[in-house]
Image (cartoon, rainbow, N blue to C red; front, side):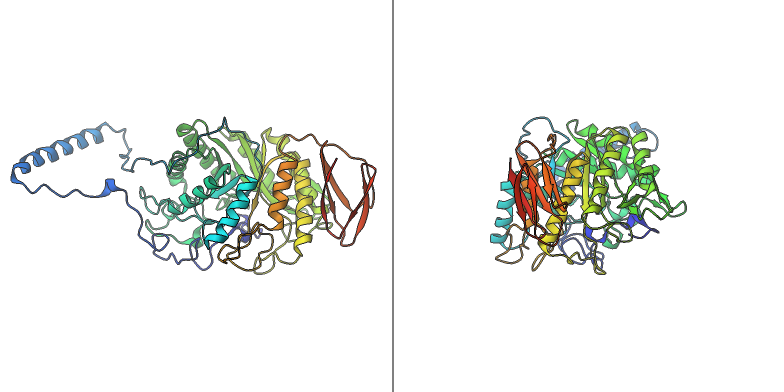
Length: 501
């Protein structure tokens, strides 16, 4: 992201390349994943009866239907159009809920452009087996990042790709989460029936906020087993270029409409926002500086203002959502990649004080990207160690839920991915980051009472512990020895170790 347009977001989030759709198929003028848009049977015309004896009855029936339609139109409030949308259909056989939903889910993941619902069967099964074993919460966006346009034209729905992701979450026993982003083209000035993936991150126009809320409500009804909903993603399209700040007023207006509609159709649903990026700058730069600062930098005041405005004007919320990176907006890890993760602690504590709500990190990043938006500069052991330090920092900051943005690829090497690409027959196997997420979630679930173990030795170790388990991370690129609870612990360079207490 550049200061001129924070709404552009982090390009690693799966922005389609060259106008292609989430599965790589060109969408210019298209309708979906290379096949026609599904039309419900209600839209099919019946053939007129051929027997003469039925013609008179048909004429009377048509006249009666026309009269009934005229009466219903006259009964509508002024300016309101009839609802010609098809009835909501529940997808598949949703599992029965196992109790009321909670807002504290622990660690989970977000599906992106490629995931375990496509590829070679054996590889898909390996990935699904790992997900089933860990039972991590899983999140999916409604458009983009693996999901096609859910409403290409007003009242014409295509949920096939979203159904596929929800089916994956059901098969693997996940707590499913849906992010209500992004919006069909016709809601943001585009042509109905056309999907321009270069405009994915454009916000709906204000006159279509209600249409987007209606779509959100329909999705909430289609998947009754999904009980957690995030509204929008990173304020995409909500940057006011003239005032050089976030359009938190516009976002909050959209949020409230979506919140109210989802709650209207699903009283059991939990809804959260504002999902704003907590950007930071070097602390010695005065532009957009705030009082929330540390060695890692200073959080952009505009992001804090967005959270404050949303919190003061929201109709309701069950949790608060933010995301961010440990590095500054210009890509600096201050003073180093491990110490920079302390930003997550500071931001978490501020957000909880400001809102009083359960805290969700929808995304977090610790490694800067190259010119092609690849994060491949570290070894996997180095990367996993920094991610472990970030999880420790988020836990200390009071995080209740954190969703790892899985940068999944189809084949080959995939830095930071959770499993090997499923397009290869031998793919699908779990990778170190998936193991870290699973072990951390099991050892330190939401509500854990952390302790300060007796530690000593090399100060390059990070430690998080409760009364049963200690997580020890070596932040050095050399072997060190530390003491934990009086016992020596040897650590290889950037090693992550789990100790029983």
